[in-house]
Each structure stands twice: as C-alpha cells, then as structure tokens.
Length: 172
Ligand SMILES: CC(C)(COP(=O)(O)OP(=O)(O)OC[C@H]1O[C@@H](n2cnc3c(N)ncnc32)[C@H](O)[C@@H]1OP(=O)(O)O)[C@@H](O)C(=O)NCCC(=O)NCCS
Image (tube, helix red, strand yellow):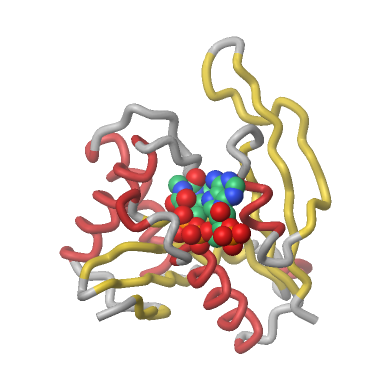
C-alpha cells in the first residue's frame, strides 16, 4: 500500500503500544533515540508515555508514518516552551522500524516534518544527534547543517562520553 503520514493522529492505546514496540526495536537495532541498547518495552514505556503527554496535553505534535496500517516511522515536533523560541521546534525521537529502514522512509518522514513546519509558519527545525552513528550524514542530505557540538554531552556508558551535534534546517 505504501507509506502514508498523519500529523497529530489520535493517540489511542493501540498507537501507544505500537510506538513503544517501534521505539524498543529501533533502540535494540543500534538507534540513538534516548536509550542505550538493550532495552525492553518496560524500559521505554514510561519515557514514551511522558512524551505522549506532551502531545495529548500540548504543545508538542506527533508525526507518524504507516505502511499498510502498521506504524513504521515517527517523530515528535517538540515546542521549546519558551516565548523567545516559539518560532522554531526541535524534532525528537526520529525513528523508522528496523525492518523498514534503508528504503527512504526516514528521509520522507523528515521531508513531511519540514512541510508541517512550513505550514505552522516556523522559522526552522533543530535536531540533536548522538555523534558516532553517522546520523549527521542522514540529516545533512536533508539540508540540515551542523551549528554546534557539545563535547562529551552524552554519557552512553561509564567512560564512554559522546559529543552531541546540534543541526538546523532553516525554513525561512
Ligand atoms: C536514522 C533513520 C531514521 C534513517 O531512516 P531510514 O529510513 O533508514 O533512512 P533512508 O532510507 O530514508 O535514508 C536516506 C539517506 O540517508 C542515509 N542514511 C540513513 N541512515 C544513515 C545513517 N545512520 N548514517 C549515514 N547515512 C544514513 C541513507 O543512506 C540515504 O542516503 P541516499 O539518499 O544517498 O541513499 C533510521 O535509520 C532509524 O530509525 N535509526 C534508528 C533511530 C535513530 O538513531 N534515529 C536518529 C535519532 S537522532
């Protein structure tokens, strides 16, 4: 059937379960989405629920990609909750189901997010990236440029600190 997107879908119990499943699988396949593998659904669920609360109670927004009705991609457009930064958003938890990666779904999801950002009248989108996964190349291909680097900001394990890259897409 192919990939289709929905911005702000109803956050049903089924969607929450699928999102936790996706988030867990993406992490355990080596993804850099807030956790360090291995994780279980029980580890992910509380963080996912907190993230969903930002959507259901506002002001964050959720973009999902489904393939034949199945959740295969998602990201959150997170509000800065700060009046002087109300004109841009941070994209968080950008992920594609491991079995669906490498088919252009991630790029399509990001393009859809940029479209949503333009419709919202935003000036730009930011992503923060865990260094060492090659992910900056994924974002660079989509027009994001590196605007900062926080040295050793992410402690993924004792004695293993990674830089956090700040990347920006100008929508103006
Ligand atoms: C990162 C992610 C979203 C990319 O999605 P995807 O569907 O696999 O990517 P696409 O197939 O759309 O790839 C688009 C382009 O980016 C490149 N790319 C994708 N992932 C990459 C990576 N990790 N490193 C370098 N390049 C990458 C692809 O080779 C492709 O290049 P091309 O256009 O020259 O062919 C996906 O791999 C994922 O969910 N990873 C786990 C979660 C994660 O770490 N998210 C990032 C949070 S900052």
